Image (tube, rainbow, N blue to C red; front, top):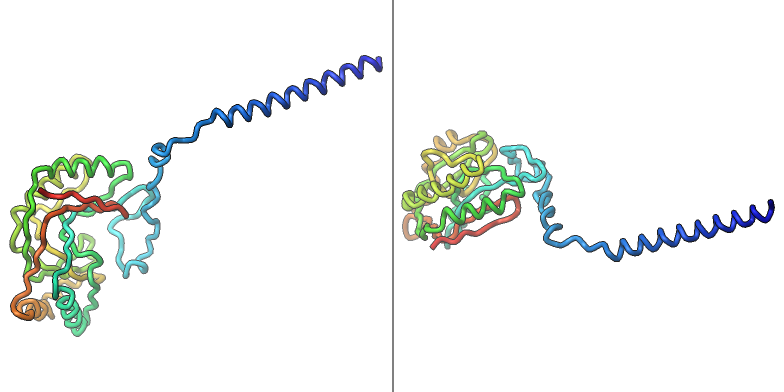
Length: 258
Protein backbone atom coordinates (compact mmCIF):
# COMPACT_ATOMS: atom_id res chain seq x y z
CA UNK A 1 0.00 0.00 0.00
CA UNK A 2 2.86 2.34 0.90
CA UNK A 3 4.56 1.53 -2.41
CA UNK A 4 1.39 2.34 -4.38
CA UNK A 5 0.94 5.61 -2.50
CA UNK A 6 4.50 6.71 -3.32
CA UNK A 7 3.97 5.81 -6.98
CA UNK A 8 0.77 7.85 -7.14
CA UNK A 9 2.49 10.85 -5.52
CA UNK A 10 5.34 10.61 -8.02
CA UNK A 11 2.89 10.56 -10.93
CA UNK A 12 1.09 13.63 -9.54
CA UNK A 13 4.41 15.52 -9.26
CA UNK A 14 5.29 14.63 -12.86
CA UNK A 15 1.84 15.76 -14.08
CA UNK A 16 2.09 19.07 -12.21
CA UNK A 17 5.55 19.71 -13.65
CA UNK A 18 4.34 19.01 -17.18
CA UNK A 19 1.29 21.29 -16.67
CA UNK A 20 3.45 24.15 -15.44
CA UNK A 21 5.89 23.73 -18.33
CA UNK A 22 3.08 23.69 -20.89
CA UNK A 23 1.51 26.80 -19.32
CA UNK A 24 4.81 28.71 -19.34
CA UNK A 25 5.61 27.67 -22.90
CA UNK A 26 2.12 28.68 -24.04
CA UNK A 27 2.54 32.15 -22.48
CA UNK A 28 5.95 32.52 -24.14
CA UNK A 29 4.51 31.44 -27.50
CA UNK A 30 1.60 33.87 -27.09
CA UNK A 31 3.94 36.75 -26.30
CA UNK A 32 6.12 35.90 -29.31
CA UNK A 33 3.20 35.52 -31.72
CA UNK A 34 1.29 38.58 -30.47
CA UNK A 35 1.94 41.39 -32.98
CA UNK A 36 2.07 45.05 -31.91
CA UNK A 37 -1.00 47.17 -32.68
CA UNK A 38 -0.32 49.20 -35.87
CA UNK A 39 0.26 52.90 -35.31
CA UNK A 40 -2.46 53.77 -37.83
CA UNK A 41 -4.99 51.97 -35.63
CA UNK A 42 -3.77 53.63 -32.44
CA UNK A 43 -3.97 57.03 -34.17
CA UNK A 44 -7.68 56.47 -34.76
CA UNK A 45 -8.26 56.95 -31.04
CA UNK A 46 -5.91 59.86 -30.40
CA UNK A 47 -7.34 63.34 -30.50
CA UNK A 48 -10.74 62.40 -29.07
CA UNK A 49 -9.79 64.18 -25.86
CA UNK A 50 -7.28 66.68 -27.24
CA UNK A 51 -9.88 69.44 -27.08
CA UNK A 52 -9.39 70.74 -23.52
CA UNK A 53 -12.10 70.01 -20.98
CA UNK A 54 -11.67 73.27 -19.09
CA UNK A 55 -14.91 75.25 -19.10
CA UNK A 56 -14.00 77.97 -16.61
CA UNK A 57 -15.09 81.35 -17.96
CA UNK A 58 -12.55 83.10 -15.72
CA UNK A 59 -9.79 81.54 -17.82
CA UNK A 60 -11.28 83.15 -20.95
CA UNK A 61 -11.74 86.72 -19.77
CA UNK A 62 -15.28 86.05 -18.58
CA UNK A 63 -16.44 84.70 -21.93
CA UNK A 64 -19.17 82.06 -21.80
CA UNK A 65 -19.40 79.10 -24.17
CA UNK A 66 -22.24 79.14 -26.70
CA UNK A 67 -22.70 75.42 -26.06
CA UNK A 68 -21.64 72.97 -23.37
CA UNK A 69 -18.30 71.27 -23.95
CA UNK A 70 -18.38 67.49 -24.23
CA UNK A 71 -15.62 64.98 -24.93
CA UNK A 72 -15.20 64.37 -28.64
CA UNK A 73 -17.12 67.54 -29.60
CA UNK A 74 -15.02 70.07 -31.47
CA UNK A 75 -16.03 73.74 -31.85
CA UNK A 76 -15.54 74.48 -35.55
CA UNK A 77 -15.74 77.54 -37.80
CA UNK A 78 -14.54 78.74 -41.22
CA UNK A 79 -12.81 82.10 -41.68
CA UNK A 80 -10.21 84.29 -43.37
CA UNK A 81 -7.30 85.34 -41.11
CA UNK A 82 -6.38 89.01 -41.01
CA UNK A 83 -2.72 89.92 -40.55
CA UNK A 84 -2.54 93.42 -38.99
CA UNK A 85 -1.16 96.10 -41.28
CA UNK A 86 1.20 98.89 -40.28
CA UNK A 87 -0.53 101.28 -37.94
CA UNK A 88 -3.49 98.98 -37.26
CA UNK A 89 -2.57 98.00 -33.70
CA UNK A 90 -1.72 101.59 -32.78
CA UNK A 91 -5.13 102.69 -34.03
CA UNK A 92 -6.79 99.89 -32.08
CA UNK A 93 -4.98 100.96 -28.90
CA UNK A 94 -6.26 104.51 -29.40
CA UNK A 95 -9.83 103.24 -29.83
CA UNK A 96 -9.50 101.11 -26.70
CA UNK A 97 -8.41 104.16 -24.70
CA UNK A 98 -11.33 106.24 -25.96
CA UNK A 99 -13.77 103.43 -25.10
CA UNK A 100 -12.24 103.19 -21.62
CA UNK A 101 -12.85 106.92 -21.10
CA UNK A 102 -16.54 106.12 -21.61
CA UNK A 103 -16.34 103.20 -19.12
CA UNK A 104 -16.21 100.46 -21.77
CA UNK A 105 -13.46 97.90 -21.18
CA UNK A 106 -12.51 96.49 -24.59
CA UNK A 107 -10.18 93.51 -25.09
CA UNK A 108 -8.32 93.01 -28.36
CA UNK A 109 -9.48 90.01 -30.36
CA UNK A 110 -6.99 87.12 -30.01
CA UNK A 111 -6.90 86.34 -33.74
CA UNK A 112 -8.29 88.91 -36.16
CA UNK A 113 -10.45 87.23 -38.76
CA UNK A 114 -13.50 87.41 -41.01
CA UNK A 115 -16.02 84.63 -40.35
CA UNK A 116 -17.72 82.69 -43.15
CA UNK A 117 -19.66 80.33 -40.91
CA UNK A 118 -21.27 80.10 -37.52
CA UNK A 119 -19.43 78.15 -34.84
CA UNK A 120 -20.74 74.59 -35.04
CA UNK A 121 -20.00 71.33 -33.23
CA UNK A 122 -18.21 68.51 -35.05
CA UNK A 123 -17.60 65.02 -33.77
CA UNK A 124 -13.93 64.05 -33.98
CA UNK A 125 -14.45 61.44 -36.70
CA UNK A 126 -16.29 63.99 -38.88
CA UNK A 127 -13.37 66.40 -39.14
CA UNK A 128 -11.45 64.86 -42.07
CA UNK A 129 -14.52 64.27 -44.28
CA UNK A 130 -15.77 67.76 -43.37
CA UNK A 131 -12.48 69.35 -44.49
CA UNK A 132 -12.46 67.26 -47.67
CA UNK A 133 -15.98 68.43 -48.48
CA UNK A 134 -14.89 72.06 -48.00
CA UNK A 135 -11.90 71.57 -50.30
CA UNK A 136 -14.08 70.03 -52.99
CA UNK A 137 -16.66 72.80 -52.80
CA UNK A 138 -13.99 75.52 -53.01
CA UNK A 139 -12.02 73.98 -55.88
CA UNK A 140 -12.80 76.76 -58.36
CA UNK A 141 -12.82 79.70 -55.92
CA UNK A 142 -10.40 82.51 -56.73
CA UNK A 143 -8.40 84.94 -54.61
CA UNK A 144 -9.61 88.48 -54.07
CA UNK A 145 -9.26 91.48 -51.77
CA UNK A 146 -11.67 92.83 -49.13
CA UNK A 147 -11.67 96.40 -47.87
CA UNK A 148 -13.23 97.72 -44.66
CA UNK A 149 -13.33 101.21 -43.15
CA UNK A 150 -16.61 101.67 -41.25
CA UNK A 151 -16.89 100.71 -37.59
CA UNK A 152 -19.90 98.74 -36.44
CA UNK A 153 -20.90 96.98 -33.22
CA UNK A 154 -22.33 93.46 -33.04
CA UNK A 155 -23.41 91.04 -30.33
CA UNK A 156 -23.30 87.26 -30.39
CA UNK A 157 -26.50 85.20 -30.65
CA UNK A 158 -26.63 84.66 -26.89
CA UNK A 159 -26.19 88.40 -26.15
CA UNK A 160 -23.29 87.58 -23.82
CA UNK A 161 -20.60 89.51 -25.73
CA UNK A 162 -20.32 92.70 -27.76
CA UNK A 163 -17.86 93.13 -30.64
CA UNK A 164 -16.38 96.25 -32.16
CA UNK A 165 -15.69 95.51 -35.81
CA UNK A 166 -14.99 96.96 -39.25
CA UNK A 167 -17.67 96.18 -41.83
CA UNK A 168 -16.56 95.04 -45.29
CA UNK A 169 -17.30 97.56 -48.04
CA UNK A 170 -15.54 95.85 -50.98
CA UNK A 171 -15.55 92.11 -51.71
CA UNK A 172 -19.05 91.25 -50.49
CA UNK A 173 -20.10 89.48 -53.70
CA UNK A 174 -17.12 87.12 -53.57
CA UNK A 175 -17.71 86.45 -49.88
CA UNK A 176 -21.34 85.50 -50.56
CA UNK A 177 -20.20 82.96 -53.16
CA UNK A 178 -17.82 81.41 -50.65
CA UNK A 179 -20.56 81.26 -48.01
CA UNK A 180 -22.72 79.28 -50.46
CA UNK A 181 -19.95 76.69 -50.78
CA UNK A 182 -19.39 76.54 -47.02
CA UNK A 183 -23.15 76.30 -46.37
CA UNK A 184 -23.33 73.34 -48.76
CA UNK A 185 -20.84 71.46 -46.58
CA UNK A 186 -22.73 72.46 -43.44
CA UNK A 187 -25.97 71.08 -44.87
CA UNK A 188 -24.19 67.85 -45.82
CA UNK A 189 -23.37 67.33 -42.13
CA UNK A 190 -26.73 68.66 -40.85
CA UNK A 191 -25.10 71.72 -39.27
CA UNK A 192 -26.28 75.33 -39.03
CA UNK A 193 -25.67 77.46 -42.11
CA UNK A 194 -24.54 81.10 -42.05
CA UNK A 195 -26.84 84.09 -41.59
CA UNK A 196 -29.28 84.80 -44.44
CA UNK A 197 -28.20 88.41 -44.93
CA UNK A 198 -24.70 88.47 -43.44
CA UNK A 199 -22.88 91.64 -42.50
CA UNK A 200 -19.29 90.63 -43.22
CA UNK A 201 -16.84 92.17 -40.78
CA UNK A 202 -13.47 91.82 -39.06
CA UNK A 203 -13.82 91.86 -35.27
CA UNK A 204 -11.33 94.17 -33.56
CA UNK A 205 -12.20 94.01 -29.87
CA UNK A 206 -14.87 92.71 -27.51
CA UNK A 207 -16.34 93.08 -24.05
CA UNK A 208 -18.54 90.90 -21.87
CA UNK A 209 -22.28 91.64 -21.99
CA UNK A 210 -24.49 93.27 -24.60
CA UNK A 211 -23.67 96.98 -24.57
CA UNK A 212 -24.10 97.60 -28.29
CA UNK A 213 -26.68 100.38 -27.89
CA UNK A 214 -24.65 102.17 -25.23
CA UNK A 215 -21.54 102.22 -27.42
CA UNK A 216 -23.54 103.37 -30.45
CA UNK A 217 -24.93 106.29 -28.47
CA UNK A 218 -21.88 107.26 -26.42
CA UNK A 219 -18.69 106.76 -28.41
CA UNK A 220 -19.04 104.98 -31.77
CA UNK A 221 -18.93 108.28 -33.67
CA UNK A 222 -15.82 109.32 -31.76
CA UNK A 223 -14.17 105.98 -32.53
CA UNK A 224 -15.02 106.35 -36.21
CA UNK A 225 -13.39 109.78 -36.09
CA UNK A 226 -10.10 108.13 -35.11
CA UNK A 227 -10.34 105.87 -38.16
CA UNK A 228 -11.20 108.72 -40.52
CA UNK A 229 -8.39 110.99 -39.30
CA UNK A 230 -5.67 108.34 -39.05
CA UNK A 231 -2.25 109.83 -39.93
CA UNK A 232 -2.23 110.70 -43.68
CA UNK A 233 -5.91 109.90 -44.21
CA UNK A 234 -8.72 107.47 -43.39
CA UNK A 235 -7.50 104.03 -42.33
CA UNK A 236 -8.57 101.42 -44.87
CA UNK A 237 -8.36 97.84 -43.62
CA UNK A 238 -7.17 95.54 -46.42
CA UNK A 239 -7.72 91.79 -46.21
CA UNK A 240 -6.02 89.56 -48.80
CA UNK A 241 -8.39 86.61 -49.21
CA UNK A 242 -5.87 84.04 -50.42
CA UNK A 243 -6.33 81.19 -47.99
CA UNK A 244 -9.49 80.05 -46.24
CA UNK A 245 -9.05 78.37 -42.88
CA UNK A 246 -11.12 76.03 -40.78
CA UNK A 247 -10.45 75.70 -37.08
CA UNK A 248 -11.73 72.59 -35.33
CA UNK A 249 -10.83 72.47 -31.65
CA UNK A 250 -7.07 73.00 -31.50
CA UNK A 251 -6.48 72.01 -35.13
CA UNK A 252 -6.33 74.50 -38.02
CA UNK A 253 -6.72 73.48 -41.66
CA UNK A 254 -5.75 75.70 -44.62
CA UNK A 255 -7.59 75.77 -47.95
CA UNK A 256 -5.73 77.92 -50.52
CA UNK A 257 -7.78 79.73 -53.16
CA UNK A 258 -6.60 79.82 -56.78
